[in-house]
Image (cartoon, rainbow, N blue to C red; front, side, top):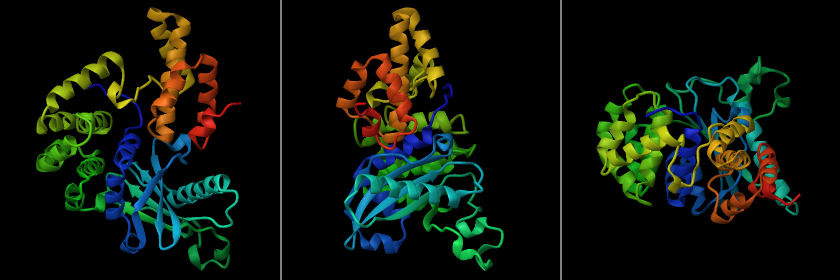
Length: 354
């Protein structure tokens, strides 16, 4: 298959966290026991929005939840750091994003006198165990011994290093009814391994269970698309296809679409891959389409494609009503919404009437 640019880690993370049962299972494995014991995970719900800077979107993915815990409402902020080498400023990034979470909550709950506590869960997805800073104090020259230490900001967060989590723990998610999440996290853990296809030979049960649940073939397409875009081992996607029922048929169909249409995911997933993330490239695609359907119509369609991709990458899947609104919109509205979507903190803010 031909490789295409995109945000494969972000999309797979959101697919993992989309179903409440899967989200509860993953958080139950990754969060420390004291938080699991206090939290009422049946109350877990997704909070829309993304807090990652656009310039860092290729390195970080995030998703936010709210959960009831011992009389308090907690916000659980899941941040996935998918880089090959440890960043120098991870605690600073976490501090910034937690602050943005609280700012959004404060703006949307102006009558509340208090703020919810934020439990930040950082999932590191690298080729080797994380060796970088874990506290703000590590970023200052004299650390906690400085007479000025009390003036330094601090943020506490839960750190989950995929490279250090035993495979058996992730495989065990299948027994908790979260086989797709277990398979996805295993692939994220080893996506940089040049021998990933060989490792997958021992994951047959969890891979088959992962693609058996949910809408037909949807989970399989998501995993194949992720491997096609992100895996260093060129044989990984084919190895997955061979290990599951109907896998090779789905693989060939996906390959044809990627090569002929330039789209990263099937239409039934509702995710259309544009040829670029920006307006300039989106217009270029519009010009290409316009040769057959007319230049103006092509520009509108290209902008619509780019806008849908941007909205879903920041705020998650779009419902039918939003999609219908985008389909009916003129080019001027699509361009205005695209400009808003680059900085807006919610989908409602993007589509609000001027």
